Image (cartoon, rainbow, N blue to C red; front, top):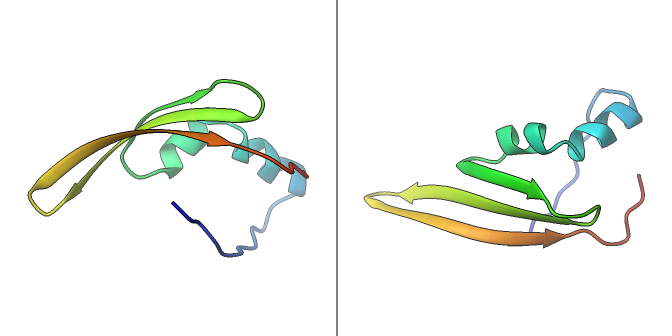
Length: 70
């Protein structure tokens, strides 16, 4: 998955950074997210269920964060 774009969030930088690193908040922001785990400070794993027309599928994946600059 390739995600690009830029969004300006009208909130203090630290509050936004904290939210981006909060598993509960991220779980609510990802459509179909059934489970999100913080495996380490730089790795997350997720289970997402999605439906396209009559087809429903569950996906599991990992995210590795790099070049972290709060």
